[in-house]
Image 1 (cartoon, one colour):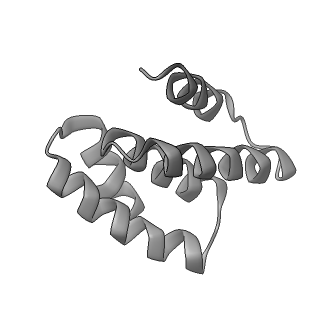
Image 2 (cartoon, helix red, strand yellow):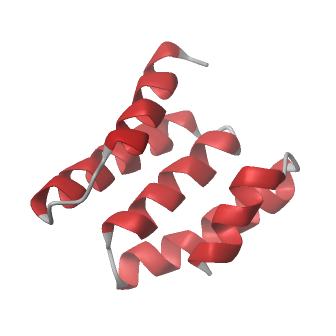
Length: 86
C-alpha cells in the first residue's frame, strides 16, 4: 500500500485518487507507524489538499524518523512547503 500510495503521490493529480490513497495510508500508519509510512501519509494528505492534517502527520513522521535515526530532510522540506502554503 505504501509503495502504491507513494507512486500516486509522485505521478497523480486526481484528488479523488489521492484522497483514497490517504484513506489506505491511514490504516497503514495506525497499524504500523514507521517513518516511511508516516512520510508517505503526510505527502498524500498534502497533495490531496488536506494541509492541516498533512502538517500534523509530517511532524509525527519527523519525530519518529529522528527517534529511529532516519534521514528526515525530505519530510522537513514537505513541512516547510505546508507551512508556506505552497
